[in-house]
Length: 226
Image (cartoon, rainbow, N blue to C red; front, side, top):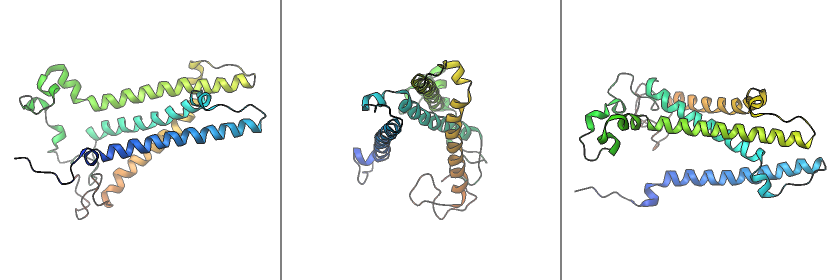
């Protein structure tokens, strides 16, 4: 007979995703209003007409900065998923045990007969192989999509400014091979890798009671995982 879960309910069981998606929505709204205000303040200082909300929302500047940030986040998560599959950090709960015996490494073929296994595992063949790498593939696809959208809207923003000042228009290729686009990208990428690397290292010695990103408070520093 299944054990009753204390406090069980849809909101209780999905509180983490609800909180994060709510914070995401609030941040996008704040990003829009702050960016719109800053852009119109700058335009008024230069004697230019203010932009309407929809005009700013669909313009190159807002969309470029939006996807620029998404791009770095999805790159970080893709790299994290892939690197933790093959590399280790002894003592960190963010790493598999270097000594082996990790359930993540179990061959899914051994569980294809289990009735509660995900259907691609039971189906076997290419579907099982694809499913075995589906998280990394999803993060990679999201990164690539964000990268392309950042590029498209970055060159849009560049050309909007160029038209306003009577300067030459850039092509997608010239913008991709220029300095500005990569300056936008690398300034975000470096912060993502730094924060993730620090989490991996600091979690060896520091704790946060109740968090699955931390080892139990009393566990030794040398222990990997929980």
